[in-house]
Amino acid sequence: MDKIKFPSDEWIKAFKDELNKNENYERYAKTWEGDFLFIVNSGLDKEYVFYVDLYHGKCRDAYMVESRESKQAAYTFEGSYENWKKLISGKMDPIQALVTGSFKLKGDMGKVLRYTAAASELIKTASKIPTEFA
Image 1 (cartoon, rainbow, N blue to C red):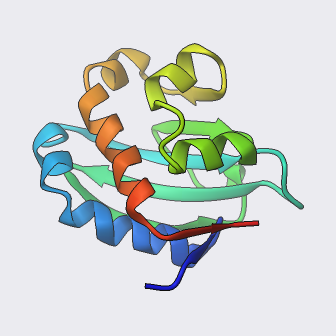
Image 2 (cartoon, helix red, strand yellow; image 1 turned 90 degrees about the horizontal axis):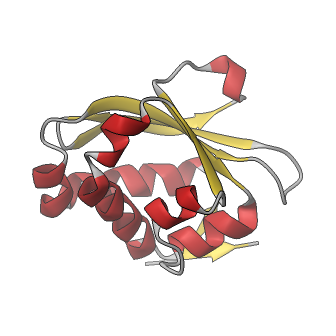
């Protein structure tokens, strides 16, 4: 498979497809309900925003949106391009990234902390995509 540029609509669609094949994610997130905006907030020519609709262990939809204001979601997860590269490459743990302030999460933190195994599977899935970074 050719490498897919991050961030791009093609990349987030590949993420959705991979996530929907991940049986561990499906098991760990079987009672999760909540959509996300994944935001690359610095380090590139502009801010990039992905909308990801997660529901009961599946990703119902995933696509780029124009801006953080153009789509409402229960959660936002944002960080710099450099930190996204580390996260997607498996060099940064998602929970550790929050604790250290490398990423910011808005939404029900208690609920997210009950689903750390699912969060880990999200990142493992992202690292399976052959990604080309700028």
